[in-house]
Image (cartoon, rainbow, N blue to C red; front, top):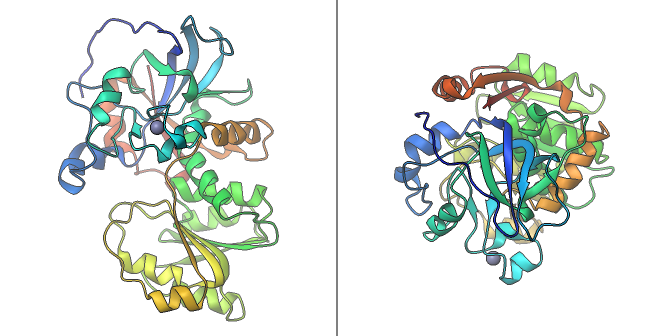
Length: 353
Ligand SMILES: [Zn+2]
């Protein structure tokens, strides 16, 4: 990446301009930059030169003349979801279901995404970015900008777990519990009353750190691929767990997903928020007979992010466990290269303009 000087954006109508104080460096950005056009040609990146950066937080600098509820000086997180705003899903607040859904500063989900990149050219790796008011999440003073850069990944976990309904008294398998998504899912599930969490991962040291968050409620299993379903069954008297959340990354094997989902009990839910790609043969007879629910979930609504930000402010979901690895904007290439080398989901890589 290269630093450049460009004109500062101006807040138009229902838009705001945010002075960015921190922007998350997500583990997947290296994949997006290097591999997305080959792996997923139907998911376009912004035309270059472009400003990337998925998870920005900062201070509102200026608001458009049709904004009434947001003011300069407000501390905010900016959700990167951009959408048309006028289709039925958008009107219900479900912007991730809009056919135009695009991740500002990251990648799009359909060929028309460039239209939205053109409207909002700044991702979070810059000093000032424009954003629509529907993307703004206000932050309490006790949630730092550094912590807020994790709202994207943890919000993804939050929205996914909400889709499973009430977790009170339930058991949950998190496939990849020590990663960026998995750690957030753990804290959120504990806050939402889950009784038992079963977590898998490869790094035993990180698994022990996760277990220490709630030793009486978290069980861990170090895996090199395979054995997860048998382990869950052995822990649950043969029944299986209520819900499974898969958080494994883009290069994870389909077998790992297949194995873990067979640790879910009859009538349970399987939710995918990881990056595992490819066609998974599913026994439809099993799906029917066992009355399984299989759910795909992407990102979250801005409203859900507001809920999570409030839970973070109340320390019901404690973001202070994060270890921040901050880089200057001029060191952004080092930040891209370093992400993923630290302590799994505990390490929070970010860039500070
Ligand atoms: Zn729409």
